[in-house]
Image (cartoon, rainbow, N blue to C red; front, top):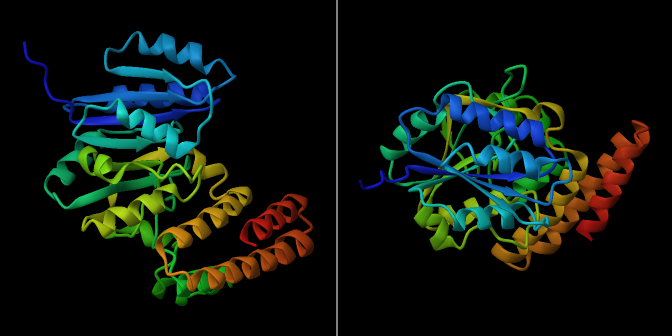
Length: 305
């Protein structure tokens, strides 16, 4: 009997989150109905018992492939490795700290199939308390970086006008086209992903999805956020954009400018990131008397120089 084609391949990166990952997997299998899916689980050298637990779990599911990398090559590289094993028409890059509450996969695929020019798709992500998370934004033009680093896009009224790199939460209350969507839940046609060569592995973590979406849009495809369906993303409820994550984002957005933007813009964007990091060092580190902030923004300044 001929096997039914796989609709979607879920690529997940496991790293020292054994119980959270198992909870995510159980929620996927519980709520995913009327869709033929597979899961590619890539472990990045976990030391918390994840490998044994996930190997055991995979033996109970004939559509779950477990890959033990025995190293941590970075988020983009791990997703590329998982994608190479995938057979689905679509790829879903999904974090291991998510919880499905209803049939998200079927709902998302039904919408995507009706819109063939979709290059990247994400839906509403919720915190544990069911408040809405930020789920993408707009590409970092010089004016947007200026507004971001000088807190201009935090001002009332103005923040509703400017298309920010990181829009505020109310921006996600309705469906809309964006420039990039978060890597916590992103669906991309597999052929398009392969044509693009996957994630840029020079970006170890943070902003890798932004850079990929930039190439997707240059290929003439759209990037879409839908405010329904929804799922819970636990990571965003506790940390959001960590200050150390922002430091890495600074480094990677400078790389983005080196790769994709005219050379004359690079010194300007570096100056903007340095200025923004110095301001944050003073406000959150010195005035706020926060040692973690001081270290993080000093790191950001060094990465921007």
